[in-house]
Amino acid sequence: MPDAVSKPVPHPGAQAATPRLFVLELNAGCIHSMNVDGSNKKTIVTGCRFPDGIVVDVEAGHIYWTNMGVPSLNDGSIERADLDGRNRKTIVAEGDTHTPKQIILDKQAGKLYWCDREGMRVMRANLDGSQLETLIEAGHGDADRRDQTRWCVGLTIDPRHNKIYWTQKGPDNGGQGRIFCANVEIPKGETAEKRSDVKVFFDGLPEPIDLELDLKSRLLYWTDRGDAPRGNAVSRASIDHKPAEPEIVLNHLMEAIGIALDVPHDRIFVTDFAGSLYSSRLDGSAERNFLYAQGNLTGIAYAEIPQEN
Image (tube, rainbow, N blue to C red; front, side, top):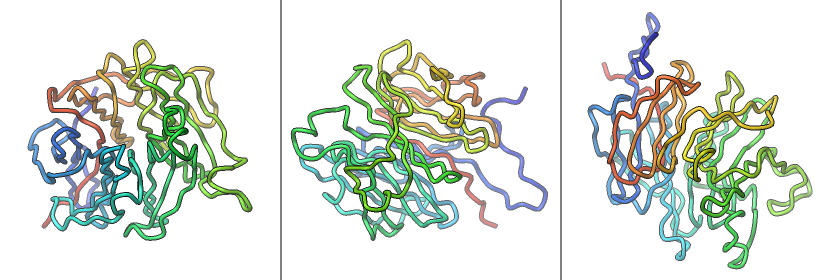
């Protein structure tokens, strides 16, 4: 059987591409780029203010990432840079989002989506940061903010059905974590705070964090940093035929945070807060801890970067 981190073979005539991981180190405020086995690691951005979520726009040659900032100061922001970290630019200014977490890209629509934890929101904007919108508002004000069941953390989009999924993690190891689903667009005549289309996909989870969607198999994957046996894990479930309980595909992690899928090559990449990077097949087999003690790791993104001629 092929190794879980083997490099993909390009199709004849296709432009050669190099698979790379982009990983956020929260405590050091850095973004690292590396091969999928952890080799050729480079620090491409420094001086980030508690980075948490990252996404890659290969076509435009950009990375976007969220800076949580200091939650009590309401000073989160979103930045953009080239794939090598150059031409860094703030696109969502400090305070225009409270504590931004996981971020995703809808390239076709030209939109960025992210969760805002203490802001208790799901938000989006154009790729230049303009047209800032709130799509989901789970609470408002300091009293609601103290209720961690309202904190929005991870998200993903199902473009086939124009649905958005997001996590509200609940208190640490509280067993009150939930995954929600709603239409991407707010129903006509309704508001981000009062939407009739919001549904609970799963509840009673330890502490769900980031989400990824395998569009081919229609499987939703998520990390959970809560306690074992259902936490410290990566779980998955069909979004079209929801099971009674999610399937755990990876466990024994140390506060799992970031997740990235490479569906064509049957692999998952995961970070945990203890500083480890893991890979496995999509079903959790062939698990490999290929880097450890790398600092407090949060977001991770996978991309195939075209090689220059």
